[in-house]
Image 1 (cartoon, rainbow, N blue to C red):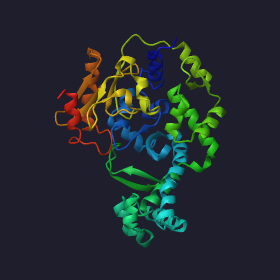
Image 2: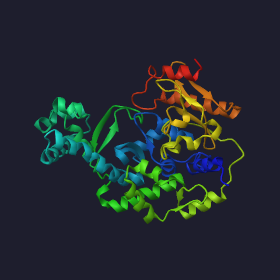
Image 3: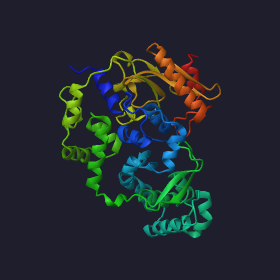
Image 4: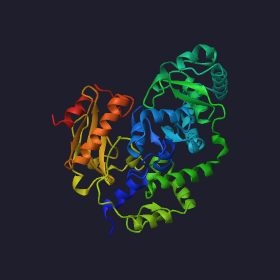
Length: 394
């Protein structure tokens, strides 16, 4: 009989959190573990640090050399992606990039000709050099239009984002952080000379390739997990899975390649603790969005802080705080307090010396190199105070 701990440790192993990625490059980490969700937070830094000990400067150097890059992708979400997947990520981003354009056409009087002219104007403007949106506007003149109150209601103040969104998805321009950080909010746009060609992939080729990538990252997953990550419809996903030759693992019912199922059958859980502090957006959980699957059955009644009060973990799909893990099992929560320069943690598995050592190591990385550890763009030291108080037991 397959125990939950075996499946949890198998996912852990597939993610390279077992020490097998020690000293690997940032590109190699993302190839093995999957693309790192950004959302304006520290997850990309923690993803490569937790698996390979990669420091902030090395992660940013990889961006500078374009072996990794932040790109729009599946469901229109932004991920830091390895170089070999640039075209695939953008191919997946193309349909979501057209959604706001179609909305503007339907409700805001925007035409396809207007969008095309704006895109051409953006390319001509960026030929002068990288610019942020504010710097671009005077150069675009009448090509750029304010969409008024109705546009604000639909989240589209001007037409600029329609053009930049399409051009990013087509690999014509790239977004670069003003300060070079992977957790920043201020960006410039630049032409992407020799950039990826997402149009070189057919829809079916992209579907098959993302299925191949996804199951290499997770090993075993359900149809629902794959649908969540890609945003594909259920019938579309079923056709992709059939072409991929995935089969069900007999005891868990999860899907995998024959090779992955064979590896899972032979897999043995390490008897040595493997403690890691992971971001709330880490791919260990985010790829499947199934929080209960990384908990021991007896811990499903444990609590996590929510704005309206603590909630049972069993009722959640997502990590709502950063997590402490051991061999794929969630054993506690943590957040960083920048005022104190310390990690504040709550454990339901008593901390061992190894746990405390890992907390100290991650704490020093955040304090000395990152300065703070935001989970997403709206997270701040001020907004985090109630959560910190809860973690402290206040």
